Length: 145
Image (cartoon, rainbow, N blue to C red; front, side):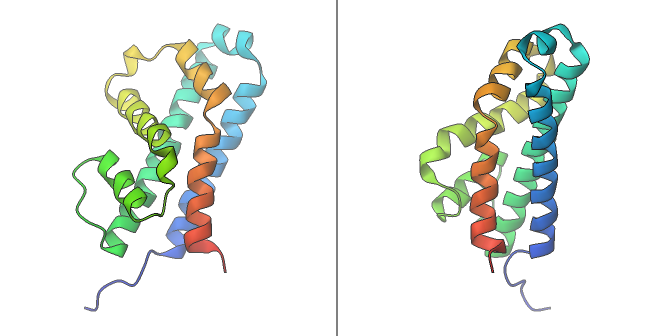
């Protein structure tokens, strides 16, 4: 069987659309205001879940690209992102933001009881743009015709 040739564009389109859908939901939650968010545990849970699965979609896309591009064999989620940074697929100047994103995902999955509503609200207010950085980089590299 011949080796794969580059990432599957349709798979990346699906992941990117999924991330965009999560972002729309998170923007809607953010738009309800801080007081409504902090008073509603259901909104808080929805925000954490949408953040988690949007990050999961980024990591799925990263692992797919790493495998198809032959960039290495990552042992952690962060290493997948790091390999994309080294390959200049994701911007190096955003490494800190991307690392925080991966750490949040790990906490949402494994240390979920340590996440506080004010932290999630701060992410909604100040870091949703981090997702757009990844989406733009992937679209520019793999989906622009």
